[in-house]
Length: 206
Image (cartoon, rainbow, N blue to C red; front, side, top):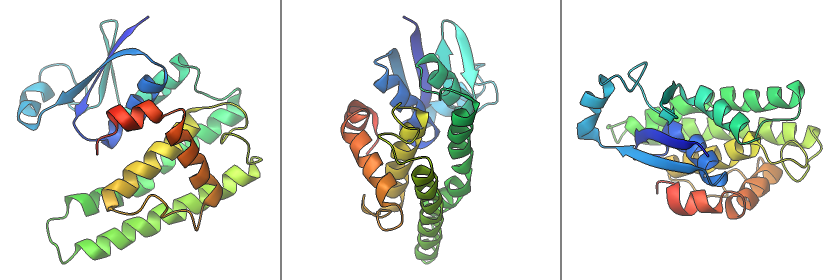
């Protein structure tokens, strides 16, 4: 079995999906949490191709860019779809995350307390907008056991991890999207308590 090392800061951020997959697959892996004071040295050490993390090391090779890493691990652990159509669904979800990552980050990084309520509302609205779309897509796909039917895939990991990471970032209750996405929320809760139980207990940064 390959030995994996995932380098990232001690936050969920762009490493959450990769950590979830490594945990789910029971991989032989090291969760390297970079300390802030060590980052300037690590950034220019040659580890990080683009001077960014996450970086995944496998058998002496280094892999960069979070979604490239996510797709690499999904293929390695048989978490992609069965055909090009299902893989489109997965890629669509991954790319859609960019739409709310920025607004959530704006809220998280804001130091002006007077602006935070407005930024929080903007991020919450964007999250709910996206989850209404995920809900429709899930229902249109048949509302199966998992997002893509009977097979557990990166789509389920994405929906579950990104939902709870974003709600945590915004300080919102876990059920905040239940009114606009009841079926997807139920799916996320089920996956959190089953397939991703170890991840949320051991690797999800609270």
